[in-house]
Every structure is written in structure tokens, then in C-alpha cells.
Amino acid sequence: MEADENRIRQMVRRVVYRTLGLPQNSQPAAARPLVTEADVQAVPVGGRIDVPQGALVTPLARQAALERRVSMDKALTVSVPGANPSPAGQQTIAIGADHGGYELKEMLKSYLGKLGYQAVDCGTDSASSVDYADFAFAVAQLVAQGRAWRGIVVDGAGIGSCMAANKVPGVRAAMCYDQATASNSREHNGANVLTLGAGMIGPNLAKQIVKTWLETPFGGGRHARRVNKIMEIEGRFLKRET
Image (cartoon, rainbow, N blue to C red):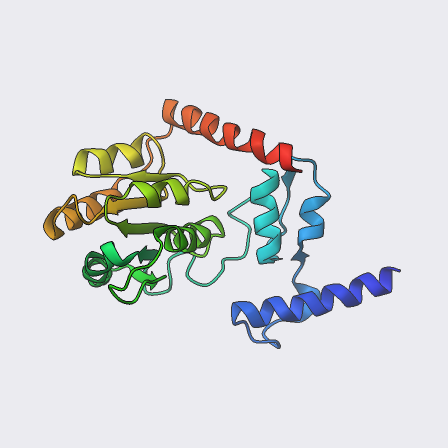
């Protein structure tokens, strides 16, 4: 039985290496621990799992941890490419839009590059009519999985995308319409997804909002206590589903 389990882990490890773009011979397979979905499922809801130094954490394990509110030591987990600063110091921003936000998204994508960020375009790729929820979900999922540092979604008013993104566990999306709301959403609420209404703001204000939102740190302290309560509310409903 143990031999079969080791064989399965070796197979999963090879798939994870290939998914993350790691060379198969970069390090002996036995030298890198593997954290799988089964490992997370074995931990009680709301519990904690210790991730060994240099371990590989599968995408399904990360998703299971979000759904079961199982905490991982982020300082020890393996980074998915684009989740953290690259050697050049860049951080990945997932960005998406529907047809109403397409033009503003294209402008902001270029602007993010000028600010030193790496933009991952989740679509749409034209002004043809599409559904905002699809692109809000695509952006929010990358943030929730740790594959993007932050996310930005643009639609006509910014409201629908905010609602859709907030349905993804682990996401705190905020619709901002000026620099004050951008700063507040970060300092007080630790927002990790920003939604904008292309029909509500112009390009210059959009750039100001994005820059403020990206550069404002989370305040911690009393704000951390309140954000934890937000996440506890989410956790109650996730717990009902398990």
C-alpha cells in the first residue's frame, strides 16, 4: 500500500513539475515534499497544515485549502510562476473586462507595464458583447489561487463584476470610483481585486485609482480583526457545503 502511494505521489509530482514549468531533473523528486488535495482534506475545516520548506503545493491542494479554510504558511509554500515578484522585481496583476470595459482595460494593461507590473490579460479581446461575470471569475480565480498578486476587472459600471468576483472564496473585491475609495479599500479592507466602471470614470482617473490601489498597504491592527470577520462569514457557508 505504501509503495502504491509513493508511486502515485511520484506521478503527481511529475505533473506538477510540468505544470509549473520546472525541469524534471532540476532536483531529485524524493528531495521535494509534495502537498496534495488529499493532505488538505485530511485536516479539519479551519485547521492548519505545515508546509515543509521547498515543498510543491498542487493547485488542487490550494483550492481545497481555500474551500476548507485551512491555513498554510505562505512563507514556506512554493510560488506558482507569476504569484510573487519575479527576479526583475515585477508582480503579476490579472486584468479582465467585458465589452464595455475593453478599451479601458487595454489602456490600463499598458499602464501597468509602465508602473513595473506584469499584466496577465484574462480577456475579453474585442468590443463584441460578452458577459462580465465570465471575466470577473477568471481574474478572481487567479488571485484566489495565488497565481496573481492582485486583480483588476472593468465593466460598464463595475458593480456586476464586483459581485461576481466576490463569489470566489478568498477574494475581497472592491468597486472604486476615486482615489479615496481606492485607498480605503486597501488600507481598511485588504481588497485584492479592484473593479472599475468604464462608463463612470475617465482614463486619467482610472490610472490614478489603479496606482493608489496598488501602492496602498493594508493597515492591519483593528482592520485585520474586521477583515478576519468578513472571511469568517465566508467560511461559515463553505463549512455548510462540506
